[in-house]
Amino acid sequence: MKRFKLLSFAVLVVAMMNSVLASAHTGFINVLSREAGSGTRDTFVELVGVVDENGDDATTVEADIQNTTSGIMQTVAGFSQAIGYSSLASMDDSIKAISIDGVEPTNETVRNGEYEIARAFNIVWNEDKLSDLHRDFMKFIYSSQASEIIEEMGYTGVDPLEEGAIEHPTYEVAELSGNISIVGSTSVTPVMEKLGEEYSKLNPGVKIDLTSNGSTAGVNGIIEGTADFGLASRAISEEEQEQVSHAAVALDAIVIVLNKSNDVDKMSLETVQKIFLGEITDWEDVE
Image 1: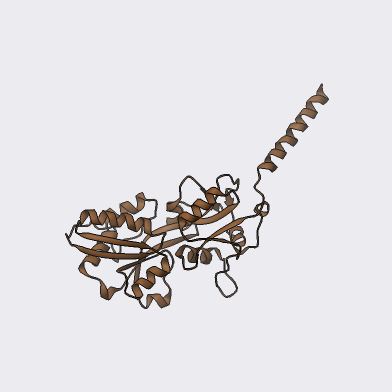
Image 2: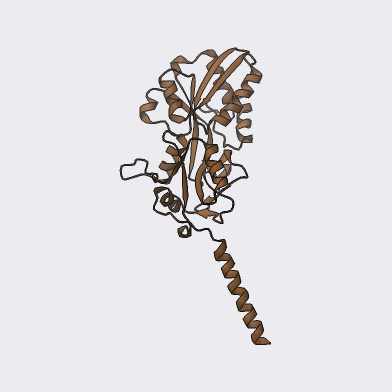
């Protein structure tokens, strides 16, 4: 009887081990990345180190390219082998974000600098071409009302634009009218769309045209004079800074996203780097 119990226990242990092994994610890693010119991609490859010896983007040629954040999310949600990256504030419950080096991506870890894959959402403009309406719009997006909207949307707020200010000032309606054209980053678009809607409610005579076409297009729109404001979810280069003015509107984490069926919940930054460089290609090699 005792021997039977021991055998039964051994069988149970083996069954449990087989169950664990069966649940472990294996197979080819389907890498998803944003298109060239995407501010999210530029920031991701820089912060994660997905670059060659010259510092140029070295994302694996096997990566499937998606032109929008929603494209990344939809593909990851529909394919268990996929891995991609997305704005934290754009996340929904169709996919999951993982911790990096033991740090969960949250507004608090972005604000205190613990979560390393984070970037500024920038607005770009030409100082010489700002009208009274444009300046009033900027007053709004750095107001207490706008700051509250930004935080409610899941982004991390930034300091007031005015140097030395401790709190965001309250926006006072100026009752202006006219058109404002904004172009740029698909990642920044949702927050700017919300801010634009609120500004237009306060100023019914103002129409805001917002085109979501990528960070580089946003900066170039200001340089070329085809838009009033540009949006960029990447750093503004030194060359670009000679031609445009810019400031952060909000801070956002870039999160590593997986299909919810994937049992991987954490990775090191080095592992993420190797996956997107194409050096790790199978889920069984992910530690």
